[in-house]
Each structure stands twice: as structure tokens, then as C-alpha cells.
Amino acid sequence: LMWNGGDGQFDDNEQLESLYTPGSGDIAAGHATLTLELFSDASCPGPYQDSFTLNIVQKPTVNAGPDTTLCEQVPHVIPATTATAYDSLIWKSNGTGSWSDQHSTEASYTPSADDMETGQVTLTLEAYKENCSMVADERIVTLFRAPQVQTEADTLICSDETYLTNPAQADYYSSLMWNGGDGQFDDNEQLESLYTPGSGDIAAGHATLTLELFSDASCP
Image (cartoon, rainbow, N blue to C red; front, side, top):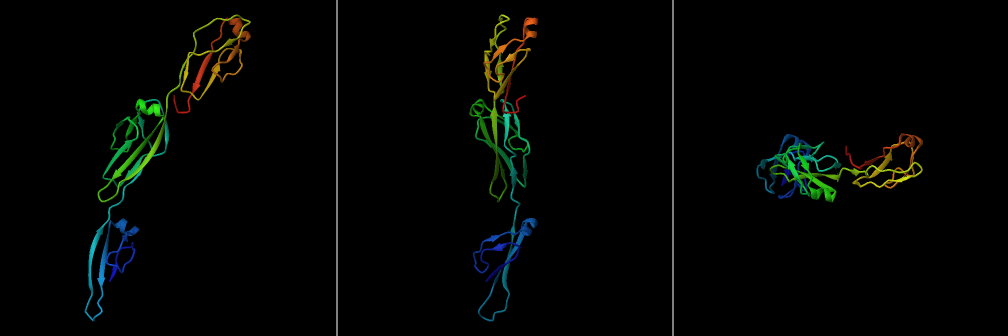
């Protein structure tokens, strides 16, 4: 016997049960006609053959987009997402947040408080099509809290004194900077920094000192 047809490959076209891998032409056409031909030892007239059509559906493709960062507990509209040749889609996560348009490439995910505490969530896009296995892709979203800052209350020093900064709150930052006045900080990138007033500060009778916090994420 011999199997033939299509532009794919049989693992052994001389066996009754043979594994056929469709070729690119088969997939593009959406089908392949496979023919089984039998041969006899006797001088029997032929051909002895039969054919059937193997219908082929295009396998879905998905791309969940690149890994990214998110600042604060706000909806994350998932960019750069693509999916083709699917019957249905669904987004899933390993977190406990909430979804909007969960069955769309234009979905958005809002992290939960637990997600923020964990600091990371994996979002997975799954595509389904009849007669095909499920395909999936994932993206990792790293979560940051927005920096929180509160400086100390207004205070008073003598003109010949220095002042050691001591902010009431400074959280969720990667770096910081003190600025203001015309004096000098001994290290303006440390929370506790020794400030020596400048001549302009002393003449004015005050200096406004500002603490700025910066985040690793794209926090506004």
C-alpha cells in the first residue's frame, strides 16, 4: 500500500496507520486530500484506492505583549496585545484583582491590595479554537506604590546653628533629593541631612526646604 496527497509528510507512507503532518500549502488551503492506494500480488486490475479530505483549521496565535510596570492600584490597560484565528479569548491572572473586557485583546486589569503587597502579577491570555489545542502567552506586571512624603513642621533655629532634617513620612521610593534655600546640605540624597543656612537664608529669616522622592516605576 501507499499513502499520498497534500504537501505534508507521512511518517511512513507504506503503513496503514501513518502519521501525517500537514504542509504549508495544506494549511494555507485549509484542507488536504489524502489517498490510500492498495497493490495486489496477483494481476488484478486496479487501481484500488480511496481518498478523503482532511480539513485543517488555522491554529490561533496570541501575544500578551511585553512585561511592564504599573504605579499604584489603578486599571492597567494592556497594550501591544494581538490574537489571530481564535474562536474565543480569556485573560487570567495569578492575582486577585478585577478585569474589564476579560474576553478581549483590549482588556484592563486592576490590581488588588494583595497584588500590590506581593509586588507582581502575571497576566495570561488564552485563545481557544475548535479542533485545536489552547494557546497562551503571558506578561509580568511589576507593581509599585506611589511614593508618599510628608516633611516635618515649620521650625526655628538660630542663625549660627545647623538643622538636621527629620521628615515625618517617606515611603515607597527608590531615591530622594533635598533642595531649597541657598545653604548647604551635607548629603542631599539622605533622609537625615544636615543643613547649614546660607547668607540669603539668614538675611531673609527663613529657608524653604523641599524633599522630593523618586520611584523605580513610571509614577507621575
